[in-house]
Length: 200
Image (cartoon, rainbow, N blue to C red):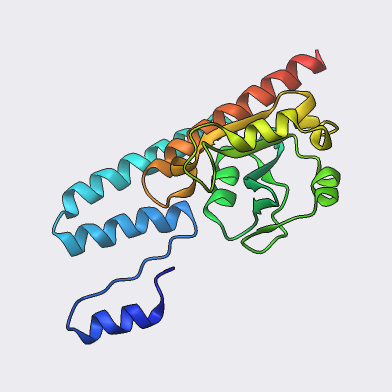
């Protein structure tokens, strides 16, 4: 849906069939797989893929029922701090994985001042792996959090709970978003295990 409406209108004016999809949740993405299956004559494959993804999500949910929910921030970029709020695919990933998006009161994606991020002080920070918004292969955002003194007071930094998840995996509204959900769920499970051990 980031394609300009004028482009869509022009393509339709040329007699082409144009379908616009805009998944904001994992459920939307799974639904759209079915839509694309119908449009491309691959309904059987689409149904099988949708069923597999749904089963994996069910398994993630079953792994941590009624468990503690850590606060989680998803950081798209660090300069400025650009985070995922509500009505984003990443918010849905965090929710499915068993966490609470510390910036769920924010509409969509947006920047937050450093002071606000420090006050939010999430238990876990998930960052886009790789260069984030550029083509670099190093984990630029992860490195910034772990080496920049301005983040040193954050609980997630002090406890080494800043994790990079491949940007293409966690940012694209396709089947790999379930891979990202499983990765974030594993991170949250490790956090819960450490908390439980600390309570003993």
